[in-house]
Image 1 (cartoon, rainbow, N blue to C red):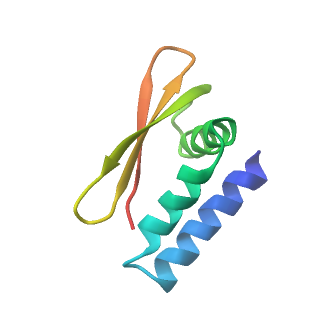
Image 2: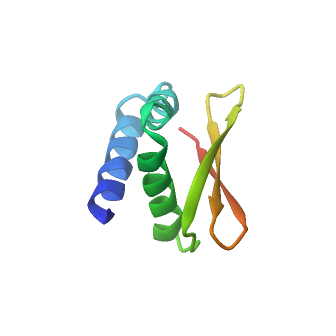
Image 3: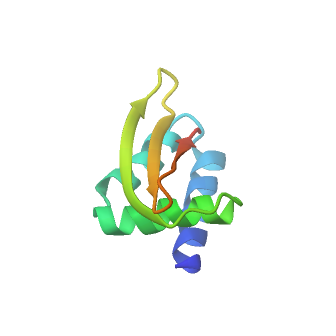
Length: 88
C-alpha cells in the first residue's frame, strides 16, 4: 500500500514539474479511472501519509475549480470526512 501511495505521489510531482498546466487534470483523471476500492486505498493512504489518520471507507468526487484543481472527500470509519485537493 505504501509503495502504491509513493508511486502516485511520484507521478503527481513529476507531472507537476513537467506539465504544470495539465498536471492536476492528469492526476485527477488517473484517480477518477481507478476502481472505488483502489481509490479508497490510495486517497486514504495519502491522508495517512500526511498525518491525517483515516481508515478510509468511501470516496466522493466534489468537483473541479476554474484553475483545474480537483477536490475529493474521503469518508473515514470514525464518521469523519476529510478533503483532498489535487492542486497542480
